[in-house]
Length: 182
Length: 93
Ligand SMILES: [Zn+2]
Image (cartoon, rainbow over all chains, first blue to last red; front, side, top):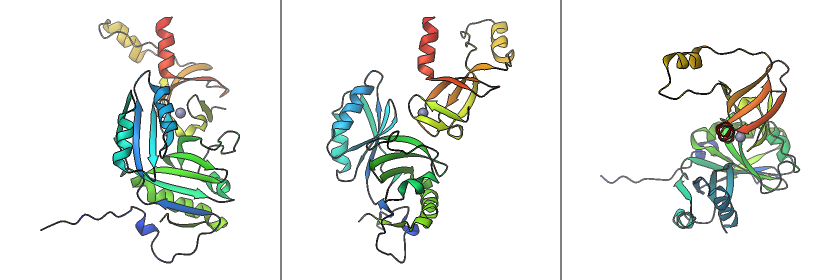
C-alpha cells in the first residue's frame, strides 16, 4: 500500500479557522524556510561569518563565535547546501525540520516582545541586522532584528506551539494578528 | 548584580539563561596523579565568602562555558570570559 507523506506545518492547528486581515501588529509564520546549522572549524570563525554575511539570499543568524544558522526563505535546500560546501572550514547540517521561523512586526512589536524576552531590544544595543540566541517565552530561541519594528524568531519545532501561544497572548492588548506568510 | 551577567558573546543577560557548575579555580590533576591529589581536588574544597571564579554555562544563549569572576557576598560581577580563553591563559601561567 503506498504511503502518501504530506507536509503539515506544526502550527497548522494553532492558525486554523477564522482569518482576519493583518493588523499593523502582525505575526507571520513562514511555512517552509530552509535552515542550516553551520559550525566553523577552529581558526575559521571570522572567515565563515564573513562568507555567510555576504551570501545573497541567505540570512545569517549568530549563535556563538563558531556557530551560525543560515536561513533562507527563497533558496532551496540544495542550493544552500551547495553554497555552504564551498565555504572553507565550515561544517553544516540541514535543520529545516527542526526549527520554526516566525516574523513579528508592527509599531508595538517591542512592547509585545518585552513580555517574552529579558533582553534589551533598544536599537542602540540590538540594531538592525543583529541576531542572538536568547530565552524567549522560556524557550531557547534565536532572535534577529530585520527592521526598525520587525523581528524574526527561530524556535525549536517541538516548542513552537507554546511560544506561538504565548506571543499571541502577549500581543492581545496590541491587537496582534497571525497567519501563514503565503 | 549577579542577576545580570554580561556574556562576552551575547551581551547582558538574565541569570535564568545560565546554569552554574561551580568553582573554576581548582586545577584538574593529571590522570596519573596520586590518589591524595585527586582526593584533594574532588573533596577538599574551599567555601569562600567573597570574590570567586565560577564556571557558568550559557544554556539559553551561546551555549558556551564561561568563567564568571564575581563576589558571592555583594553580588558584584568583575568580569566574564570564555572558558577556553581562561584555560589558555592558565596554561601560559
Ligand atoms: Zn552567551
